[in-house]
Amino acid sequence: MSKLKIVAVIALVAMVFVALPGCGKKVTEDNLKKIEAGMTLDEVKGILGKPTETEDVSTEVMGETVGGKVCTWVSGDKKIIVTFDEDDKVFGAAEGVGFGEPEGP
Image (cartoon, rainbow, N blue to C red):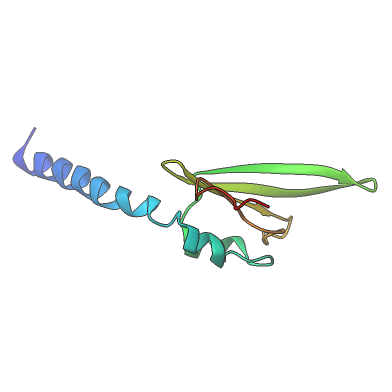
């Protein structure tokens, strides 16, 4: 392998290690609170980045099939789950997991 190829491989690996830590820093309670019903998928991606996983979902309502998707962003033990309608808009509230215990009654 030539020196140029070795340098290129090292640079690529270094870029991956520099970029990866920033991905999870967006899965925070502060960012969870920014997600509001009606926001577009692109707006949510602007806050949280690319989802860790996306699942297409559908259900039947009054004889019609209604579709949407559930996107999940994960960082360590923290998770943000957002449900989108068929127009890729936030449906309801975003759900956070791992941000502390809910307060008691």
